[in-house]
Structure formats: structure tokens, C-alpha cells
Image 1 (cartoon, rainbow, N blue to C red):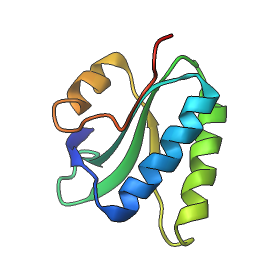
Image 2: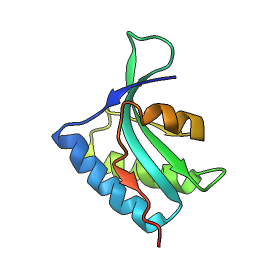
Image 3: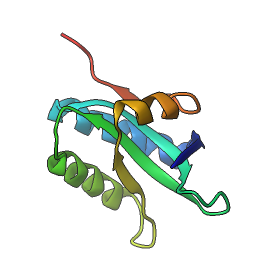
Image 4: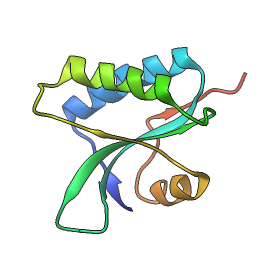
Length: 105
């Protein structure tokens, strides 16, 4: 997987705000990015919600993020939701800044 750039625009900013509120309440998300990626074929780019979480199996996070996305966009739109390893997070941060970072208390 190649991280290409941050996905950003007015609708994406609204999505990021709503996701950030959701992630703050869940408590298990460390960071989240909305990125354009390719999966080895540069001519086919995808939008991916990339998350770093404390959970080994982030089912709750993925479900919550899917609900937020579906509430904002029509049924033809989709976003890939990808849990990131530490190495992938390092690579993504080279081209994309996190829209959510958990506050340490």
C-alpha cells in the first residue's frame, strides 16, 4: 500500500470533525488519517480512513466510523477503513497529517 496524500475538501472536513467527535468518545483510537492510497496500482487511487487503535480487533471503531460515513454520504460512496501498524503510521504521516490524535490525560 502506498500513501499518496491527505484527502481534504469541504465534505471531508465535515467528515473528519464528526469522526473526531466519535473517536474521542470511544477512547481506543490513538490517531486517524483520511488519505488517498493505492494498493500497488498507481492508476487506481482509493480514499482510506486509516486508524491507529489500542484494540487488536477494532470492530467497534470500524462500525462507528462506517455509521458516521454512511450518515453523511450517499450509498454509492465508500471509504476503505484500514487499521495501521506503527510502520504504516510512520509512512502515512510523511504525506498526511492526522485529523485526530487522542489527548493524553
